[in-house]
Length: 162
Image (tube, rainbow, N blue to C red; front, side, top):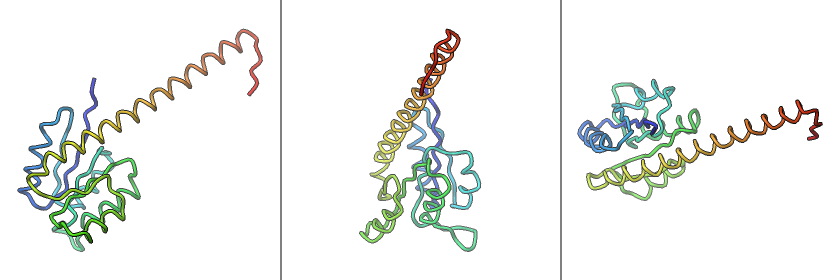
C-alpha cells in the first residue's frame, strides 16, 4: 500500500498556484494543499507535509510580509525533515545564489513549461523518502531480531557479553 504524500504549494499568484495544483493532483498518492501566504502555511506545518513548494516572492495580507525565503529559513530551522522547492520568475544569478545559500531541495524557474519538472522533482523526493522509510523499517526489524535472540540466549542460560 502506497503512502499518500502531502505537498504544500505556497504562491500568492492564484493563477499559477491553481495551474501547478492541477498538474500535481495528477500524481498518484499525492495530496496537494494550496496556500496564498507563508503565514497561512506556517500555521499548518505541524501536519508535516513531505514537500513545500514556495514562490520566492509572495504578496500577503499580513504586515510585515513574510516572503518565500523567510518561509524556507523557518522550515529549515524548525522542520528539517520537510523538503522545500523554491520557485521564482526571477531568472537572475543573484536570485539563484540568494536561494541556494539556504539549501532548498531545488530552485525552479516559474514558467508553464517547467510544470513537468515539478513532477520529476517530487518523484525524486518521494523515492528518497520511501528509501529512508525502508531503512528505518529494516533498522527496527534488526533491533527486534537482536532482542529476540538475546531473550532466547538468556532463557537458555547463556551469558551475553557486550
